[in-house]
Length: 124
Image (cartoon, rainbow, N blue to C red):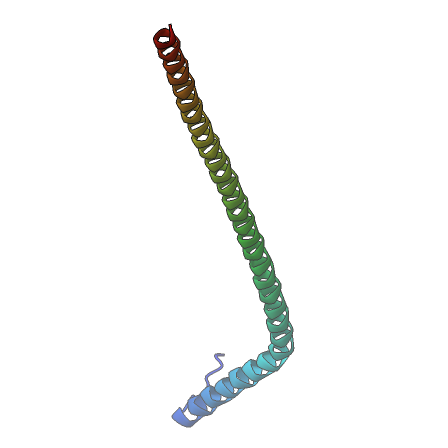
């Protein structure tokens, strides 16, 4: 014999209502259980993010320090090159000045010798 049930509309509605209530209750229970682990995961993620940001800041600081060091070295090198160039220019100018003085002195000595020769010739 068949088990014939008379499913009336009210029976179906109450069964659907009970099923929805069971789903809601299961959702709430799962949500409460997940709440504890969610907070722990969020805390862990926050700590990981902070550590990552700290490492990134340290890397950027190292890069900045390296750029500054290279810039200081380049400036020092440029200053040394400029000082060497200035010293070379000063030495050249001094050598030119000394050469001019020697030429003038030689010219004056030559003129003095010439004048002496003329004076000796006239004296004869």
